[in-house]
Image (cartoon, rainbow, N blue to C red; front, top):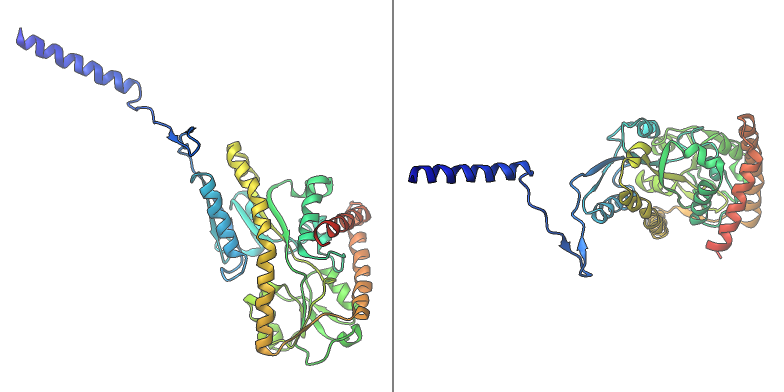
Length: 366
């Protein structure tokens, strides 16, 4: 009888164990309390990893901002968004940033807009010289408003999820020509680096020769006397140490503003739960808020370096500024004509961009 009782007990224990296994063998997790005394939904196990292509070096001033952006998103998502920044072209060539992202080879990227001619044709209107913007935040606001409110930009950005379109400080024109540059006549015959066909035309009308130079070859070309200077962004001045070999820096708001972008692969973004999409989209405002202080500090560092190396930095006279704007108008006409031939309403796009610039000049630049 005792043997039978033991057997029955073992059988009942086995049935209990099997019943637990059938129910999944898990106990329910207890929700963690929030600071407000409520209950926090258990964090899902799925982590979404995004590999972001950053083609520049880690010495570029924007790199720490991108790293902090990634950290904040990870924190706000409780680790469910893992944003990894790959610098120095670790995920591919600079020229392939956009196509690699669209095709899914990368999950996102930061890069310049005008580096990919013809890909963002309508947006490139903001990269024309002397459009009248009073600062880089005006250009940033104008681009984002046009993206949200016009079909011109919506269509060409449709393959990507745009986190942020943004701009930087007006690009100075630097010289290593050993001569005083106080008017367009003083620029006559100089070989200067340009960024596209429209700045080539602009420089030609100012008397200079526009020369195409590799993106990272500016220092070498100036050092060897192949060019006398050209149009360079402040980050190129800093990271390439161009201040070592130039003698003058012409700073004018009537130059061009760099156009840059932070984008994600659209399919990867669409895979995300709505709450994670919201975290990414909300990060745009934080990202753009970092730019004024970032670029102000960058300009201050460059001017300090210019002082150390005896570089003269100055603004053009009123007469010289008028020459700069007059020459720019022909490059505007060239862009409008080129876009019209591509099947766009070039004049309408240009006029709309100028309207947005005027609007945000009033709101953001006093």
